Structure formats: structure tokens, C-alpha cells
Image (cartoon, rainbow, N blue to C red; front, top):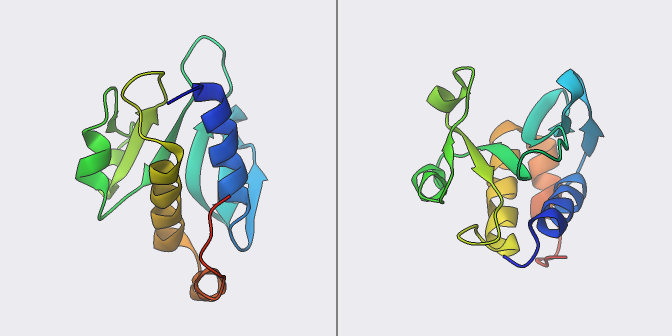
Length: 126
């Protein structure tokens, strides 16, 4: 991973580009929501910690937990498949993998009409 902060910004842009997604700031964190549900927590932007994200994963859960520094999410969310990933210079997944995981999380929480809008899009990544 070239620059964790740049990758983090790109991941946020990707998430907010999904159908009906929008940015919100509950608890002082940046999150991506669809409807009233969070599908990615992007953190508070605190410079003292590495940038990262917390996503709900079913199919990719074990792969994500294998990333150096990754862990089941706090507050009991890990029991429901949420994984926290810290983006570091070495050992972090490349942006296309993070985008796949963001999309997986989105599909798990988004309304069917939003998922249908995503499926209707041409296959391309920014």
C-alpha cells in the first residue's frame, strides 16, 4: 500500500459513490450509510492512530481478519461479522480488495432497491 491516508480517502470516495450512500458523523466518526444503516465506519480522523475502517463481512470475514492488525470489531459488533482493519504502509490490502469489502458490507445492509441499482451499473472501479 503506497500511502495509507490516500488509500483511506479513496475508500471513502468509493463508498460514497455507491447508490444511495451518504456520509454521516455519529459519535464524532465518519461513516458511510445507506438508508439509516452504517455499512462502513471510517474512524474519527485522529492523527494519533493509523487510518482504518470497520466493515460488516460475511464471505470475506476470515480473509479480512488475516490482515496484519485486523481484529473483530469492538462493542460486540465482531460477533455479527464486523471487522476493523488498520491501513498501514506494509501488509494492508490494496485498494481494489478494500473496495470489494466495502461493496460486500454495503450489500449486507442496503435495501434491495439500492443493491439492484448497484447491480444495474456497468462494472468499473474508480
